[in-house]
Image (cartoon, rainbow, N blue to C red):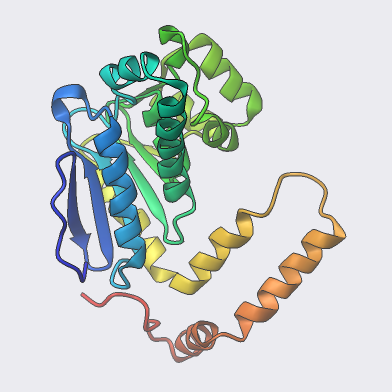
Length: 269
């Protein structure tokens, strides 16, 4: 990271390796549950990392035994007693941080251990790649408290499909890492001891790709839906590859491959 590391009260921001920043939720006493402060700090941290040209990949992690217990219940209780106007503004900030992560133009990897509950599941689903330890468990738990997974609903649905998302939300059932892998909530499961090595292997794959190409991938795929491939979709893809194929990064990528050398965007040890 090229800028001075900001001081946060609920997060730790660190350099995992060259080109890779790690955002660690650091409220271990409450299993990294988030409140208004953490929401604001997550939003600020991701904005800073997007603006930092030295950062290629972002890892989102939770300190201690658990990834995240979701929304802090004291925060939710305060919200239940607040005015509708306050609730709406607070909910918009809450929704905004998920959008910030999901729309981040740089790849985001979730490093998950222990429990991921409620909004913690949403965070995993908002990341591009989710890697879990075999001790991880997941529950879309909001209905237990008389509320619903509204803000995280679109991210969960996009990750696992509507029927699985609806089942998880209605039953609040806690599922293990193997089932999370089966339904697409996470992409890979490993041992707790091997979690960091597995995350780092994925990070190395990401660093091998062109950063502008990855930005283009995220922008294009955000516009694509499962379903018929219409004339408009075909034209979008043709226009996109025409523009990107003529870029400086593409020329460097082809030249590096043919010369059997690393592309210039790959961080050097």
